[in-house]
Image (cartoon, rainbow, N blue to C red; front, side, top):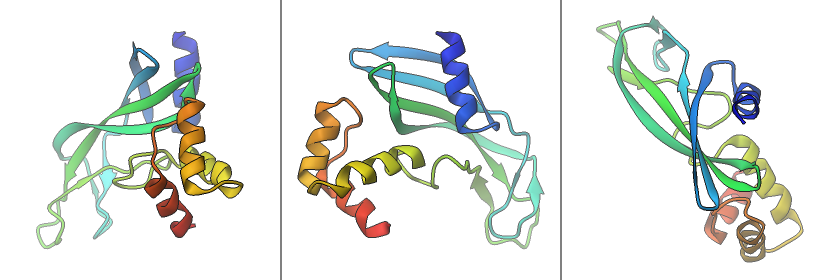
Length: 147
């Protein structure tokens, strides 16, 4: 099982590493953490290794082993080292998920694929019935508007 988890996480990003998982009924939580020692400020672009804080962010992902999957990403926030910069602290970003998003990009892609041939209500019902993800019709509509 550990090998499967390692492979799953390495397919998402080389900047995170698998730490553990927990099965809770029909759901699985996969815990990962950042391997980065620095990040670039999104405002001024300066690289900083000055850690501000760490926190856990939950992100829904594609099902794993027929279970709804949540990634618990233990992230870091860094302090910008440029005193004149308007951003004092910033969170690191990853390619597999948009900033502040609740779902991975690949789950959003699957949701869009399912919703192409169905109404938003039906797409949400299909995803719930198939154990893919817990999303409502409003989420489906929001994604359709973005794309």
